[in-house]
Length: 166
Picture 1 (cartoon, rainbow, N blue to C red):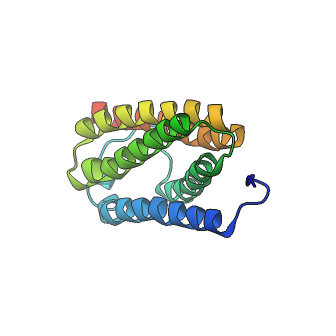
Picture 2 (picture 1 turned 90 degrees about the vertical axis):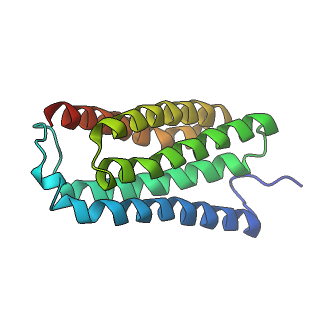
């Protein structure tokens, strides 16, 4: 018997919980490095006019992390997906998540916007590749990644502007 997205088994729900836990652990680690720097180092940087207020980042990232986990879960449990295609899609997912985890310690922890720009450009490429591969397996998973790709695009431009201005 095959399982579908409409009727996932309890084991498959466990996978979703695991993915949410891992993704939000990355979020928590990033926040741990970032939050102490917001009112100190980051506040002293010259920022472009399109820099959002600091309060925007928390809700946006929380939503994006949840969507990321659900997208990866849908790909993980997709019954009709080719095994090799699924593995490659999830490999790109893990790569972009690793790069996401590295960015905050580089930008905020090391206070290195230039080096962080390199990280986020590579991250953008990994997010774009993940989005394309997710679409091939599950359209909903692909669409769940589109807002993340848009936000990382914006964050890349913001990172570049902060680097240039400082």
